[in-house]
Image 1 (tube, one colour):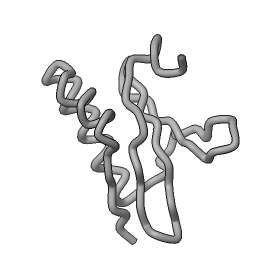
Image 2 (image 1 turned 30 degrees about the vertical axis):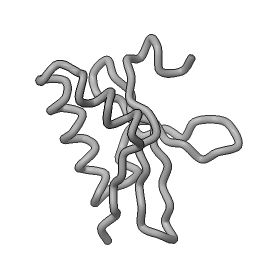
Image 3 (image 1 turned 90 degrees about the horizontal axis):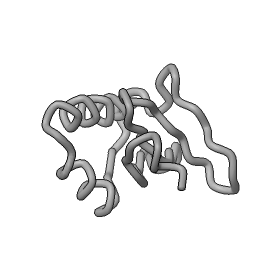
Image 4 (image 1 turned 60 degrees about the vertical axis):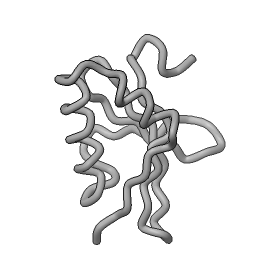
Length: 85
């Protein structure tokens, strides 16, 4: 099964502003969510929403998975110091 991966406008804006090497690493990991929306190392965050987090170096990608619609929505991308504030 293949999932459709979408980025919120704010997440896409953050991704565009990152240094090229970090951008390529993060984009590769986001593209991998098409086949495996819950890869090894993905953690479910606490809270009422079912958000997941993957680590990409010093950056974190927060996303939501909809199995019914086969969709992954990337909510936020940020540095590990700032992402959870």
